[in-house]
Length: 273
Image 1 (cartoon, rainbow, N blue to C red):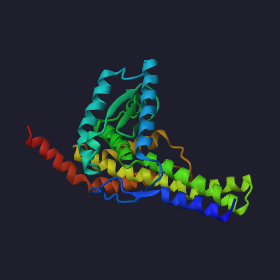
Image 2: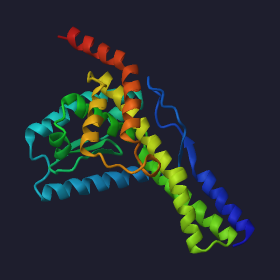
Image 3: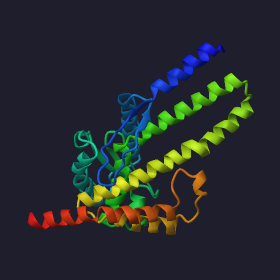
């Protein structure tokens, strides 16, 4: 490969990753610029198609929204949170939101692009979640969608892999050496960035919950419960999530920052009666 062609490919990689700010900072102050290579429309379409396929599969197995009371409970909490997404993104309240519950023992919940929410019954039942705790988890997952963390991660992986390949070609590296470089990029770049995503979603999530009138401190109790069930964790440097201890300490700090929003929401609720 000629130096001219290599330089052109590297320039294409750099210019493809546009610097954007997906959200306003809110009270919690999330203001990090993000590099995006994937077009938003294309990524959102892919995620919506995957979500639809997943829900259809759950329905075929009679696992979709089987517990009507649980489904109504989760949807009611979502309806209180969704209007407050405007604090971070003015377009978000008008997304094509969907909220579904899948019957499964998994400790899982997610919010895909464009507001596609899924809760697994296992996380609600096994952790005996209160409404405040469901709101904490949901606020966290919604925040991933608001910040477009999925598109950012896909962009990072694309850029890292292309960069390693081009550098390897330029230096004449063999396959083994390029694999080692890939492992190093994983630990030094991709995993720390993913942990940063989790922390951002934690902080934004407690603000969303507080604004909707849910106690933001419930996020702390969720992770104490998770710690009791999932005591085996890889070292933080090798994990896409912060350690339980790191996460709880950060949530204690940020839930206290948004307590005034929770108190305001409670007063407004009383005044509306």
